[in-house]
Length: 160
Image (tube, rainbow, N blue to C red; front, side):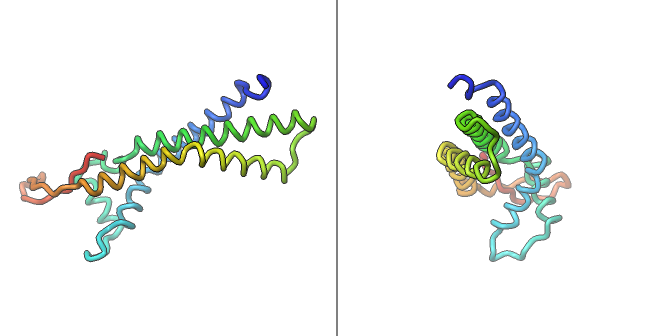
């Protein structure tokens, strides 16, 4: 059993985790913009991507493009680690059991099982992230502020 739970398996899990975290960090601003576009108030005129970016930057500055990033990093990093680590362990176990490399069908089956394990283990994290995002949206308040040009305006604030 110790031959299955190896440093190589851990390294594969860690590599998958870091890869996913790097990708989400790189593209998180696009995810934030997409989410804003999809959840905008339908009673208002539809905004362009440029308008959404401008709104985010005016409301929260550049950090606004990464609002909620930490929760996503934790959930995605954990999820990717669980998937890649489980996949590698199952692959090594199957190869040791049969004495030869796994073929495409068994490889697919191992991937499916690793995916199922991943969903079962990390679903609570994703639920927490979703609840935090919904709670933040519900807790938004409108506050009066004076923007950089000295013009009074209102601004959404949220803890998340």
